[in-house]
Amino acid sequence: MINPFDGVRIALGALKVNVLRSLLTMLGIVIGVGAVIVMVAVGAGAREMIGDQIRSIGSNLILVVPGATTQGGARLGSGSVHTLKSSDAEAIAKECPAVKFAAPVWGEVTQVVYGNRNWRTRVTGTTRDYFPVREWNIRYGRMFTPDEEQHAAKVAVVGSTVLENLMGDAYPLGKVLRIKNVPFTIIGVLDKKGQSPRGDDQDDTIFVPLKTSQYRLFGTPFQDEVNAVLVQAKEVPVIREAEKQIDELLTRRHRIGRNQEKDFTVRNLTEILATAEKTLNIMTTLLGAIAAISLLVGGIGIMNIMLVSVTERTREIGIRMAVGARSADILAQFLIEAVVLSISGGLLGTIVGMGSAYIFSRTSGWPALVSLVAVGIALLFSAAVGVFFGFYPAFKASRLEPIEALRYE
Image 1 (cartoon, rainbow, N blue to C red):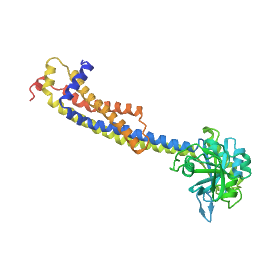
Image 2 (image 1 turned 90 degrees about the vertical axis):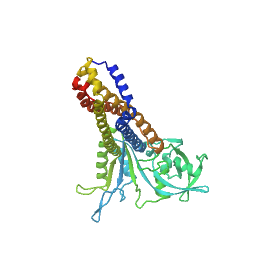
Image 3 (image 1 turned 90 degrees about the horizontal axis):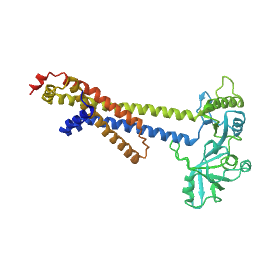
Image 4 (image 1 turned 30 degrees about the vertical axis):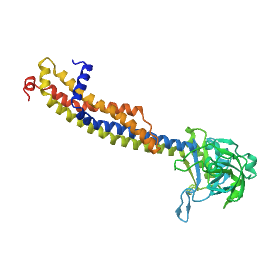
């Protein structure tokens, strides 16, 4: 039986005879392996980026919004009517065992002025519990005190984007900015959060105490009304239980009958993350499968060129058989050549794929995470392609009659 190392050495020598033809034959494998690696890397990067954006909102997060009720025969969407109060948030925090924090929010986008600069941003009234719900730390300064919340104090915690646009490098704590011509003292600056899953700048925001927002800035059509309630469940496994408890509690508090439409909607943002990841996994799989077609095309190219090689080297095969080579040796030799060809293409494709993923990430700003598992699978698949498509030409070569092969011109 032929020594595998000798077989590889002979195969490399045979491929060197027609370098250009060998490279063109490998091209399908190179493109296929490279495309699979790039597609999987981009898909993994997108999944990581969207996951980070959703996690930046907060973990174990449940959003309660008003709406999803019926008025005048028309079913309104969530947030289209105003039925939530800050007292609902207090009740959720106290009466739902699976809930850790509940924070009401009330605000709108408005103009903010500091000195001769102005900036349009979202001003949100909320409570101290909002920041642990969002897992949002104060970079320096402090958050509101209970006394400031109770007495509707004119104090503000600002995001980094607002700070950069209004004050530049100036020290912000203690400075006074005007929101709707009402003076507010800056008491804290938030850590950077980056973009939300919708692409909004989460740092372009200002937070004030809830009562300050309701009574000093924007007012409310109904007493104690809020836009939404952000809820954090105690743990991931109890999120669904927390949703159920919130739903039952608000149904009782709002006196909603069995056959009536609910005037609130409970959303689980963890499910949004799971759905986004599932969608990306499907897309990555589909793109990888499409890219893998190039590997099959490359395999057909290998079969074609190996059949040509068998025809061209018929006399060589006859001489080898005449000096003692067995059919199994001829089969192994040509099979090794096909595998070497496909693996060489796979290695080149890996280099091309990793390089392309890096260039794509640098030029587009989109993360591309190269998976070693994907690289390994692509290489194994390319070797399998070599075995599968190289077997028939190798088998054909091994079945040649020595005398007929020697007489072949």
